[in-house]
Length: 475
Ligand SMILES: Nc1ncnc2c1ncn2[C@@H]1O[C@H](COP(=O)(O)OP(=O)(O)OP(=O)(O)O)[C@@H](O)[C@H]1O
Ligand SMILES: [Mg+2]
View 1 (tube, rainbow, N blue to C red):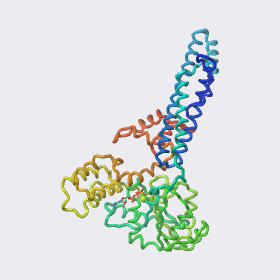
View 2: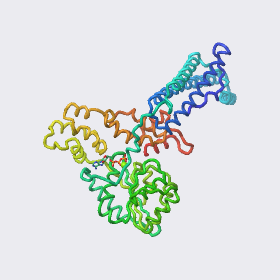
View 3: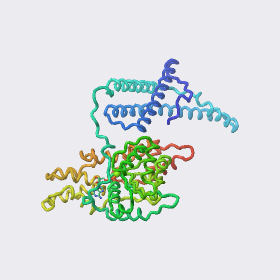
View 4: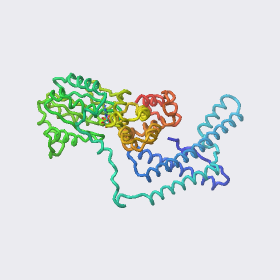
């Protein structure tokens, strides 16, 4: 954060003493406003997923005010620094003899604030103008904002509801995962449990939409796997790791009917009774929790089983590291052949022999754009399914993914989830990468110096900016 200009002694020397005091006051107010805006923006970015347009616009305008304010403050700091240098020059010029000079230099450093640093009329006026804009934004926001009781809210499609998964998979539609399925099955069945710890955990890790859930479904339904366990449960966890809720869902999945048991302790003892001395396979789909205490508390009833194997699907390597007792399985994108196969399945279904060669050529370009991500291939494939107009196909192949309407509603929200889960400092670093051209090969040192120059790296006392930058870029 910008060092406080209030801490600098300002003996403003604008035209009159009153104007000087006024200039100083303008800057004080501006700095306070800037600090408040920055704190509010930081909190908002950290805690809220802001969806309504008025609030978004409001924050954008506030951010602009904060930038303008920072410019004014920095210009003033520059004036102060220049004033110090001039004072130092004058002192050095006017003195002679080493001892004397050293004393004078110390005096100048210690009392640098005594140098007259005028707050220019221009800065003072800009400071007032920025404050006025700020007041205007605040007032307009209060006037325009809709409150919860201003009529019924339209229900927004809640991404978490849409993301709910089950163990069911329609296997014939899945392409290119036979090798992965075999690997995971083998790892799962051979992964050892010990006499003291019956729990073993195999994480499946990969980016959003790559097919982790799909692979877990294939493994869960694999006959060899199924026969190896007496009990089986599939639970969709999602980003809120609510132990009570997850335990209740495991019970429901095990007894195949809704469990009306409530309370953490009751649920855990019911679960213990159900799985005691049995072998159980558990899939925890879509885990984001990275707290060890929560994980341990969740696992404690599983110690009653004779064998408990858990498959965890997650986007995050640190989640995998926290839970794994065997090496994580890193899922990669589909090969280009399998990507094409999947796309063809959706785009040309039922018209295998009739599709025009031109559409095939454009379709291949569309598939290239998806970079082997099944979620994107499926979305664009089904979007073009009933489309015979070649121009429409070309449009899709030429547009960016985020400009395509269907992708906006299915792929982007899934990918945005990862963004929402980033801490604020990472979000800012990530956003700054948009300054590089698309497909640009990023170099670590280049990226770190960009972050440093944008002021995004702040030493935490133990590590300097470069170390923080290296840490972020690795993560
Ligand atoms: N190999 C595949 N063949 C066909 N369809 C697939 C394949 N892999 C994934 N899909 C489809 O792609 C979509 C995304 O897959 P999935 O939900 O398994 O991804 P995910 O990695 O679990 O994503 P998230 O991190 O968002 O949970 C789903 O509609 C799924 O059916
Ligand atoms: Mg998933």
